[in-house]
Length: 190
Image 1 (tube, one colour):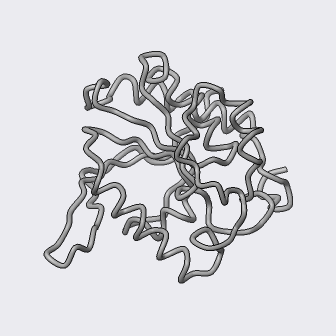
Image 2: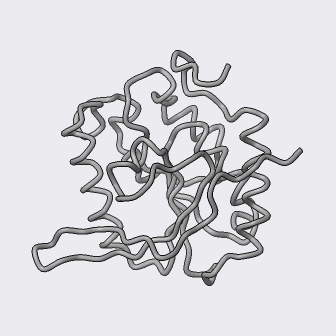
């Protein structure tokens, strides 16, 4: 059932999988970066791990690494936004790198608490983390609720993508500046 927040760490629906497959075709045909300089960073929730599997399989097949990071998880403590234990995730996703997954995961405490102030602090942490990376391209697969605090602009829709440039001001504040209007609301394959 769609929008049932009581389902623990839900999988993608069939419609969601079809949307991801459509996105894969679009991205592969229009990807503007050298694949050799890319890395995929993903939230440890099942639906985002599956989104990587279905939307970015063409990158996975070319050896682009996938790093699972707790900082990118969704922002509520509802069962749908609480993930499985690391051992279960590593078993289900053996080709993904879990070495940077915070040991506190999946607990919704500390930096991962659902309080608005905590979520905004975590958003600042991920912006700073992004600014410290040397990769040519980092593809982040995360959740719209959390992204609302990371970037400015209209709310993300399911399976939407945008490109950003990282900008740091003289005070050390980090902002992500959208480069260009990107595809909105990827339709599902019929």
